[in-house]
Image (cartoon, rainbow, N blue to C red; front, side, top):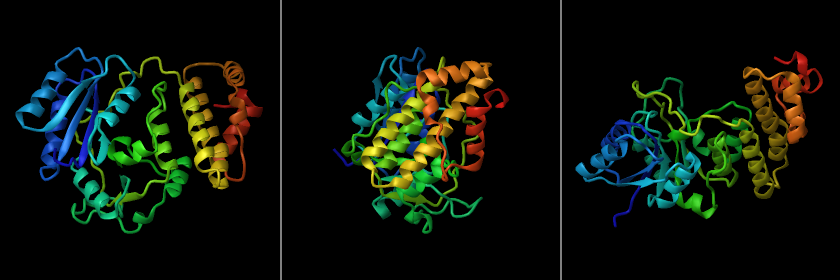
Length: 318
């Protein structure tokens, strides 16, 4: 079997022709790359599976469709990881994508022997650089700790569907999605990837959405329990204390910035849903989440204000 450079993992449920269109588009962008398409079907009732299989078969592409029944999207993504054979993997949702970024990502990965690649354009509004160069020299030296700090402070954001990760890195470190988590599963996965300190490459490319794409609707998005995000981050925190116990600043940053920010985001969600301040406070206390509202010198000023307001003047918190 030829060496596969990239495995494209596509979770799908009733996405009609979008899956086959996605396969067609990516295969056209990667004509000189050995790529496989792994479609994880989550109990679709339409013909999307048939269209995807026909696209793979009619164009002599490497790929398959795997049935995962009614399991969670986290379980579907984990299945994709374990069934893949590519040196690198990427996760792509059918109704959400970017134009022609994968060649530059793969070039950056090969040039730097990276285990994690994301887009960091050298200039706002910069054009896509040629795939054979494709690495941002300044950002190329970004470390996992640097990126974690930027994510914790929400100073940097990148789309989960626009990264590539070395498959062997995930398997070696036993990194996977939390299958019992429907809200926050992507965030937790990315944090766990970075906690094991991958070699990072930053492709000098400005991502451009496909105009016809719309935001992917998670098939498990109904009746989401927003507290699951807190539980997911607590699991990440446990991993951090094991893997990065030598990094006291990162531990404090997670305790006094990340965890309280997640709790406050849940408070905001509950407020929007019409829950009273008293009900929210009672729920947080019963679940033991009030202990996570810690602040320190590393806590951002706005978050500090929100935490203090929520703890001592909850009826005024908006």
